[in-house]
Image 1 (tube, rainbow, N blue to C red):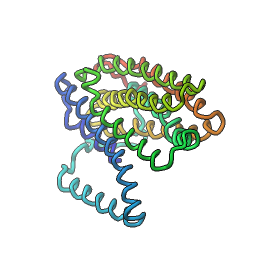
Image 2 (cartoon, helix red, strand yellow):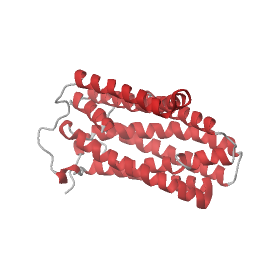
Image 3 (tube, rainbow, N blue to C red):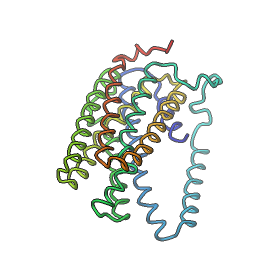
Length: 295
């Protein structure tokens, strides 16, 4: 809920449909998304430090105090009506009626499934069982990966060199989706034929993270660019419902496929999901004015 509220608030605060505002929307969405993931990586590291130094119970107290401070700052620092819909929302309206939102949500489902199919369960087990890494090394590496992933997301507008125009960004999203497909298939081939597994997996993970972060940042911008200010929270909520579904789907498959076919099986399944996500983006319009409701 916090993530949905934060991202939809950006759309509310930048409601105008001029090129300069759209550029600002892309920039602020990228900064918000990237900083969130970078802080998530810092949280992994900080959590380990707290557990090692204070133990589980006191670590929870530290987290509770920190969250309490965040809550107080939100209560006194934010407007109470920020992002509030002008009309009450009925249950059936929780599901998007915009074709573009549905397309993006479908793509998001498979995009995040493609990551978690090999990142959540298969990769840590592989690093431990095949490369001999201990838990500290695995946790630290994955935390650093998440921090780097967030930094790339925050830098997405500069890397993509787009000003936030919806049409050009949709085209750019397709290009980055194709790039992610190539990277994922290359990793799958390398793992399948065991081409220097350490370099293939670790190097592939870094490259995958960079390209995946670009895809995620571009998708996050488009979901807001295609949304009206009054419906931003609903659309973002529906979109992240698909995001959560994809992550659950990927996590479940990660363990199952790794048991059956190892890391190579996970990578090939991930490749299929990336192909579905990238091909779905083709259905997006190249003009913000062409957003159509579902009949």
